[in-house]
Image (cartoon, rainbow, N blue to C red):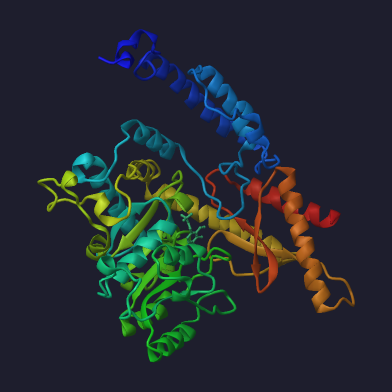
Length: 494
Ligand code: PLP
């Protein structure tokens, strides 16, 4: 026996926290969270700290001895909360506003307790089968056809990357086996997306080793939607030049304006040229559960894959992104690799998560989504999304009715793009646009600095544009009115 094995008396107690303490602190943490939500409006939405402020308050090395849970929880209040930007705040209107929900938090809690690694069916039959069933419920709620099978990844960026990998596998160039480097027999491969497509598509292409030049950006029309005629021309031109198109990415709910690409026209072109159509509905897709909004997925019954993020607009705690795919066989062919130590007798009869992506272990994300859908029901989720869209229309109507403000894009979902545009007589156009960019930036920073609301921006036709996104489960008309007053207050003082 070595000395190390002989010195057990000197060691701290082993094992986890006692059940008694777990119960006590567990109750305390749930109480803390309930309190947090009850009083969240007293906190500034955007963290009001300088970069480095939290780091400066934390020790630079890990504690040698364990600390009490009381002290750790006290530090959450003292150090962590002031350094948070509160995504759950009802006046969070930046980027795409999202939110967690109580059943989702319970799902996360249970999933952390189960701590399964859903890589093979047998390592978590519950995760594997609940995922299939829950995603099939969601598919039906969205009005998608039964040919689409769902699979959960962490983010839309990763879902889209996998969809493009499956599309590439489908062109039979043995890229899985032989790669793309050092080959003279490969033409330039091409993926198309609109100039408004999310940067995750560029990143997916970079990750897959296709190179940025593989992505051809198609111009959008004056409502920020992909121009299908320009797409058809680009494909024709590429084919004439010996380039091999294999995938088109259309977006339902673009990031800057939430515009909807004309999927029915795009899918027609894809079918003509035998190209994979991937639909990025990461933001907008959830709205299709609202019966009168199902039209947004028109044409998607002919798409090859579609991503939507319950962590964006289905009140699911981050992370949870769903990829619906018509060709799971290709996804499997692109990624399945089963070493001896992962072989199981049932593997041919069941679905194993690790066959469909780069990850081996996967979190049990279906649990929270299942709990959310059961708790709110299709009706409850629909009502919340419908209300967010109503609030966005209301805000857009205030912008429209005010001569000092202007809508910068249509509002098909719950995102309003707008800008202050007070006029000065005799000012040149160029000076005016520059002045308005500065003014709008100042208004946005002014509102954000109050801590009472948080907005973000984009550029549309080179003009700085403010974005108000409504997607938080706690946001009501009162909060939307408050941010409108804040904006007008800033405009008057600017
Ligand atoms: N696609 C669209 C249209 C988005 O708006 C976003 C993020 O806002 C993404 C993809 C990326 O989402 P994720 O953070 O899940 O990767």
